[in-house]
Length: 293
Image (tube, rainbow, N blue to C red):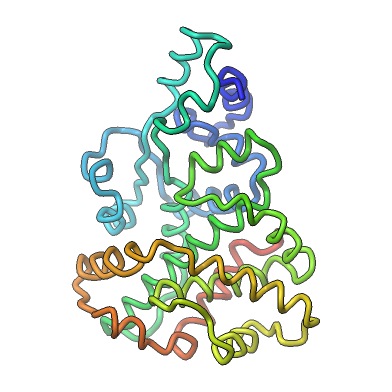
């Protein structure tokens, strides 16, 4: 796709609260329901976005999350000006493929999901294990939003902009996601996927039958017809494609940054579906994303 055409789409879509120097931001706010809902909720919570240089975030972004949430300031990189200069220089002789591998991505969507999830009511339990579980739920919420946002990526330009603003964009799952949402409802799909990511972030390799049945009971999905349940379970496998090293090493490091030391074995042994605050977190999640189709 011509880079000039993408810049044109970017400029035309910008609204007063969109990020003019984040490539595709306004397009996603206009066309992607989840992206738009998360942006609105983040702004309502008082967060602001900044493209001012942030050395810590540029060097080691996952180590800066707590500072982002504390300061309510979400960093990103201006990746528009450089594209505009290229288009001015080369006109129609430059296409997306020429720059796609090198242009800096931004993760304002993912970080915004963390901001929204942090606002959900917290468990009354104040132990380190409760804090760790809360952090896992927040990460799973962000994972789920990124995955389900793919359902709105209807054309090439929307896929380009979403990929440029996401850690992962599994476009090959778009049809399966849309079918599941149509059959079982967005909120049911969202809760099931979030729980699958929660197991994945707790270092499980898959859901066994007992865990799956407990999930269905928790989200009240058991009455669904067998073909729909089969489709839902197939979708949960996506959650376990998260990078294994990131799930283990990076997760434990992030916990350590927050004063929590948990071994991989301790993380794996958490009885996820009985933890205090889980049902409330799920309900808060669907209140934010509810009404999507």
